[in-house]
Length: 98
Image 1 (cartoon, rainbow, N blue to C red):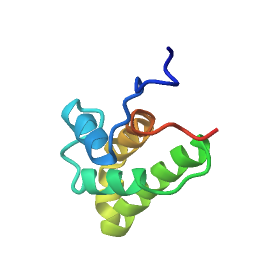
Image 2: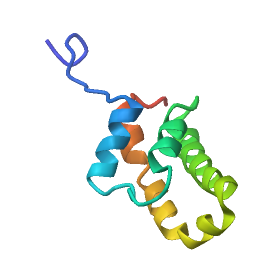
Image 3: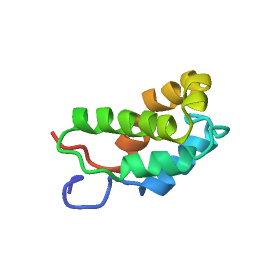
């Protein structure tokens, strides 16, 4: 018996993956709408892992820019740090496409 005939891989829902990232400080919880934007990004449709990581980053960055360009610029470091860690919730959530 190996991992292909028993449930050994645990994939978290976007909501759960983002909650864990917020709780552990991987995503800055002081950013307004951090959870909303991250969950939206994680539930997007992506064909490849590279496309997913780029799409997640783009969605979050653009969401903050549309919300408040001043906030997006003032909190750019926190937003980018969260984006650079977007791979964590994505990787822990689903089996990545090749």
